[in-house]
Image (tube, rainbow, N blue to C red; front, side, top):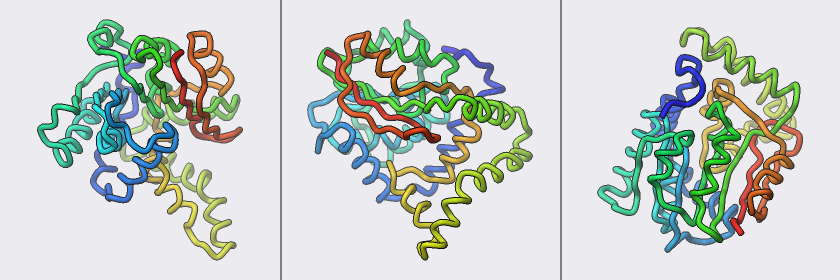
Length: 271
């Protein structure tokens, strides 16, 4: 179940998520629930099956389970699997309606062992596989007819994306103790202007705190994920919409990041 990038160049997402969970608060879990409810336009997920591909910290899986879904989580990274298992043990110990496995979205033989799901979810994962289009293709058989596919994919910014790809690869080649030489400049570049603007408005760090309420995530851990997140692929909104349109999917909801950094979020219905 290997992915198509050498492990020595791959960002260790699980280690970052382990650090994230050490400071996870109840209000972040509630925000993760609210994010799912908003994008899926549902107050609960009772009687729904939910596949979380690349479960990472396990926060989205936890949110889906708290909303009533029967959840199946998997991740390629063993430490991410451990993070998801930690949240299950803490909030839903011995729950038969939440299954967690290690697996690869690029392993069609393993994927064929899974059933179909009402909701297939993969937020900010497939562009880190090293074979994004192949991964996107492999999602289709997992979605039940009439079911929904909820994905988030990095926005294509052309030369800006090419620049960040170089930074990300360099980050993972640096010794761990030297990676701050890329992380701190990125923090200043990405957050400096917004921090100054908040100060001038008399609302210091309001954007930072607002980000912390988005999907229940941590701005610092997301920054580390952004700088180090390699492999790294991107796609335009139109390309993703056309890709799934040709495969019998109808776009139901789009949360666009415009021309900026970040992920475009798509919810498709399988016709």
